Length: 424
Ligand code: GLU
Picture: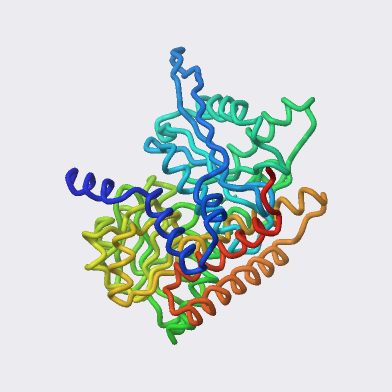
């Protein structure tokens, strides 16, 4: 198992994968060399190391990152993740993905990403607060509502965003600056629907995909890997629409029921026990087994590189909805393509999160807040429109959905860069 894990991770890095897809799209778009060079590398990469006092009185040092791709279309935008395996390269790859995601969705943002290498599961709330505030202070010179706007990502949420707003506001004469971060609690200028936006947006995309597959949601099955914010909301939406969620999992393992699971009840079980594992009336299965289940939609909604060259030949799903960022390695992508399995790429499938972040930022700037219905209606509009753009490019250019999405996204950034010209 450890060996497989190692082989999987060293197969090819997420950054190499992101660059590979960019190069291929640039070639297809016949982009000029100057634009390719500009967009291939991020504008800023910040590494910070900082001390945090732990509950036992000792001081530990942590490393954190913030990478900004390019502010060509507007301020850069992207989440902050806390994870023991975060690296600068991974954050750079994720910043690049954010750039294409924002562009594809038609948002006035460039891409960015941040991360701190830490294990939040082993830290107390006080330790996490001190870590978040100190990290925020370290990256503050590069953050602002017109510069770079963070948001939640893996293992961060409203609570961390509130600490970040507070810290950076306090550094600015205590002036309340809600627009510098999205994914905040509503009482601090957060938006309706932001907490469920990634899963909800993925569900709208899944409906579009099922339509193209000539399948009705009521007759469709889905297996969802990851039962966090994105995966659990997707599963609930899918179930409520009449679809069958036959398996879900989290980092501790998975559960399976061919008749379909009730995601709401699974969520309750997870809240009570800390995991979906041992949910009554379901069989257990591993995360690896889940990815190889026979189903209509496979929804990786956890971490990157879970579909790799070892398991891609064994995937039995008809289509994949990438709710996680970068769940498919470059090699796996080729294999799935050869096998005729459609992959709705991350920059489209999980773009609901940043889309409602954009709505939040607009509302914060106007100090005028929308109803949950209005947010949901606009989110559907944005997701459907982006899906249609991608589908059209897929048909016109004869490329798979990922390449089509990359082409639409990169084309728009390139046009903006060209129009702005070179400042020299
Ligand atoms: N972390 C999310 C993503 O990967 C959301 C980013 C945002 O809202 O800015 O898309």
